[in-house]
Length: 234
Image (tube, rainbow, N blue to C red; front, side, top):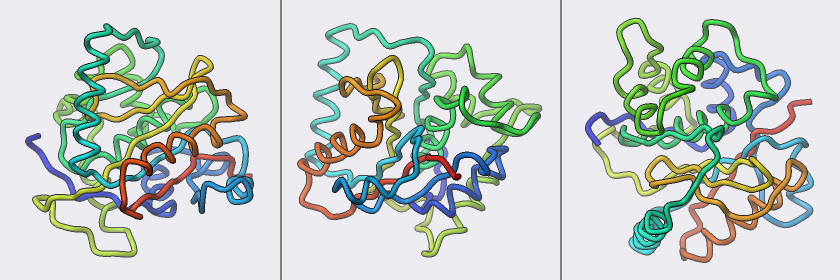
């Protein structure tokens, strides 16, 4: 990865401010904390839930699992529905922004975007691109295209803790979990494909995402996990 950004804090207030500045209407749907995976805590999350962002620690074990999974999927010639908005991550520390774009990009039938905003322009102009082309477009936008660099930097500096420097190694990573075509999909810009984690529905997305998160947690002794939902703001 060439360009490197400051990492985003896993903080709903930061994500809401960032998304709103990019043209996302937070009056109907907004990012909110998921305080735990028990049924009682999941019940506190407003419904409907459109997407879940999972922050997890990157370890030798998770990296080995990712590489093995990529190889297996490449060997299987996996087919992914073309209407899943998915993009590669080519910018260091951009996983928070990529996760936000995955969450919003796969919820376009439920949300409102301001005309001529970054989000409206970016999603429209990349609609027919491949995942690799979308990643390159984010990193190297045309002169007259939507540019997110300054907005990301402002959001990264908006957290409750001081961000590390762009060149620092960060061992935490965001992925998005969305529901499409009766399945829950993991969208990680570092992976070869969207990952099918099994059956899901709009009503069960949150509980299904919790099960996926538990699988991630089983691969680590760390407590550095965090979940945020894109959910009803009503």
